Structures are given as C-alpha cells and as structure tokens.
Picture 1 (cartoon, rainbow, N blue to C red):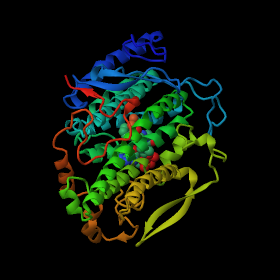
Picture 2 (cartoon, helix red, strand yellow):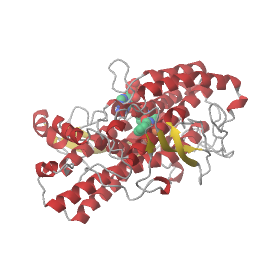
Picture 3 (spheres, rainbow, N blue to C red):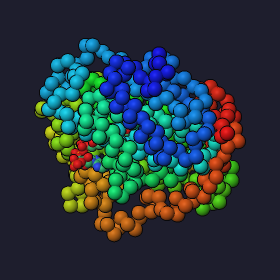
Picture 4 (cartoon, helix red, strand yellow):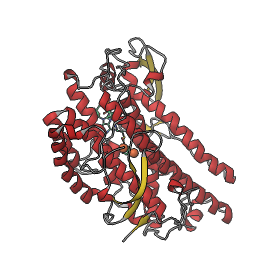
Length: 474
Ligand code: BYC
Ligand code: FE
Ligand code: FE
C-alpha cells in the first residue's frame, strides 16, 4: 500500500532521496497552479466519485471515494522491478536492463519522455470546457477521472525527468507546464494535441482513437531497456484501459440513441434525424474520419531514422516485442510501406528497422478496426443500413508519405480541387460542429438523467447504480 500521508504518494521510496523529493515538492505548486488554470472549468469545489491508485497490485489497485479534484493524490507509481529483466531488442539485447540512463542515449531518451509527457497535460487542456455541457453525472465523473489520471501521467514522466536527467530534466518539467494546447507561440509538441475537443462526440472519439495511440506508444515504451521507463509505462497502461472504455462506450451510446430514434420515428435523412435532437450517423462518420486520420499522424513518418535509432539503441520496442518470434534486431527484415507515385498509391518494401512507426500504426489500425466493427453491430442490430468505415490510411494526413497528397477515403489520389469539393462530405464542417454544439448548450446534472442525444450506459461505475450522485456540486 502507498503511504498517503506523504506530500507526494509514491512507491519509489522518495523519502530516501531528499534532493529529488525537494525538487518534486518545488514542482508541485507549479503543477497545482497549472491545474487551477488549465484543469476542468469551475470544478475545483466539486466532490467527485473518483478512483485513486493505492497500490500497484493487479487486483485492488484502485480505491473509489469522493474527492475534490485539486486534492486528488497524484502519485508516482512504478510496477515492481524484475531483477532478471534484460534489454530485449536492438544492439544491447541480452544486457541487464538499465537502471540508470546510458550516457550516450541521454538526449534521445529525454526527448521521448518529454514527448510522452507533453501529451498528458495537453489532453486536459483540450477537454477543459466539456464539464459545462456534460450529458449526465456519470459522464461528468468519467471525464474528470480521465483528466486526473492524465495529470498523474504527467507526474509519471516528470518523476523520470527529475530523477534521471538532472538540471535538464527539471527545465523540461517546467516547460511541460508552460506549453499550451493550440497556442500559437508555445504549442504542445504533437499535432493532434493542438486540435480543439469542442464537444462530447469529439471527446469520446478522442478517448477512443487518441488515448489508444497512448496505449500503443506506452506499450512500445514499456518494452524499453531503460527499466524505470518500462515500469512507469506498465502502470500507466492499467489506467489507460478506462480512458478507452469511456471513448468506445460513449460513441456506442450515441450511435445507439440515434438508431433508436431513427427506428421509432422511421426517419433516415440526416436533417430529419437532426430535427429529432440526435446526432445523424453521417456526422458520426465524419468525426470518426477526422479523429482517425489526425491520430494516425501521431505515429510519425512511415520511414523514420528516429524510430530505427530508438529501436536499435534499445529505448523503444515494438508492440508486444517479447512475444514476437524473430531476432529482435531486424538487421535483415523488411516491411511494406505505401507511397504516392503519380496518381497511384504503391506499396514497397523497406528495411523493417526504418518502418517501425508504420508497423506500430498498423498494429493500432487492427485494434481500431475491431472497435469500429463493434459500433457497426449496434447499427446492424437495429436493422438500419448504414456502414461506418475507416477511411484509407492516406486520407487527410499531414505526417509521412501522404503529406501534401489528396487521398479520398476510398484511397484514390485526387487533385486538390477535386478533394476540396468533397472535403465536408468527409470531414466535419463548421455546420456539423455548430449542430453538435447546439445539442450541448447546457449540462445534465440530475442523478440518473441523460441528455436526449445519448443512451444511458449498461451499468454504473464501481457497481454503483446509474442514478448514483457521481458528482456533488456544493
Ligand atoms: N506532430 O521520424 P519522425 C498519449 C516530428 S499519446 C508534430 O516522423 P519519430 C495520450 C518528430 O517529432 C502517446 N510533429 O517521427 C493520448 C520529428 O521532429 P524533429 C504519446 C511530429 O520521432 C491521449 C519529425 O516530425 N507518446 O499518451 O519517429 C491523451 C520527424 O520525425 C509528429 C508518444 O508519442 C506529429 N504528429 O516519431 C493523453 C511516444 N510526428 O526531430 C495522452 C513518444 C512526428 O524533426 N514519442 N513529428 O524535430 C515518440 O516515440 C515519437 O516522438 C513519435 C514521432 C512516434 C511521436
Ligand atoms: Fe495518459
Ligand atoms: Fe489516457
């Protein structure tokens, strides 16, 4: 069990390293001031039924209780150390896993940790306003849960920066609180984290698509030869599952509600569907295409020497690296990547080492496709003939081989002019956003009530009933 009487709850024996402890205690008020500024709007005094990590044991690691979010115990938890763990891939394969940062990899490792850390507060900033338009107390509690845990993920990376990177690490930790999502002068590092999350459909799409990038990146970092990073990421992954659950079920519930209303009223035309106050399936498809394509960019370039270096040096592995049956060095292997040649998309083989971003993106796409298949079944079960589809990988991309090309969702290479003609059939328009926004002008705060545009969930949180008072406003 973690000792919660400490200022910073932890299972890393922080009390034994006074210098580190003081440095983190110095960062803590800056973090709190960031939370007051950039955390969920007007929420500071609410009592929220939250889970807090209280141990790293697989069963019973979390405890549920009412907490005011500024008093949430953001702690530092690493999965227990395996003394026999080794570096499992790259040129150092077979060496004992590193407990300290290898000098030659210091700057690239710092950069990976900073990039990971930067996404966590960014997502909180993106979601800042959504509490004001929640469809239920259940959903309000869920977004707050996601927000406090993203805050904890920032703590997780800041711990590594402070503990292992000295002064540079402390400076990076401060910079993590200074960048702002969407800011023109000092934006967050990765593209998707500077996009607005203007409404709840966008939020659920984000937690389904973008938090899942979090899962795959954390899985790759959990393979790291740098053991503290691996152990940190392993624990973060246990929390991540709930974020993706919120996204998948949130979209499911919206689809379900739309389908029910369509069936009851025997309407199909999107404008008739909107007239009934629910979100038409076409708009849901456009949001899906947007969040999918923007998230695909987060995997980086299809062919990347950075990715090859991360792998060769043993810092970032593949998805489920140790379960893969090959040499884990990839000196000979090849991997297919796509590129645009003239008006065609062609696939060619490149050294697998350079295609690791693409490979992780492909692993991600497989899992995404399963989830979209589950959404489709809701539509099929109601007997509505509408297909949700994942657009082609090259559609609406700004990183990698498709950058600067105009690819349709079906995978045709178009001229810019032809593509623009269809842009808002494929992606949400200002009108779509305005419509979705119009449904979410206020918040639903009566226990057990849900906004018209979303179905209730199947069950409550931690076996509580749906009409449980998940948030008390005071
Ligand atoms: N936007 O070889 P390249 C999460 C830059 S999500 C802007 O293509 P590399 C979460 C790149 O930095 C998980 N810039 O890329 C989810 C490089 O810059 P320089 C986050 C981009 O380095 C929801 C240049 O382009 N974790 O946890 O192989 C809620 C060319 O580099 C982007 C990580 O990402 C972009 N999308 O791969 C809360 C893990 N993509 O060198 C949280 C750590 C690339 O020219 N990060 N660039 O200045 C990494 O492993 C790698 O940095 C990336 C990029 C996979 C992101
Ligand atoms: Fe996270
Ligand atoms: Fe997350």
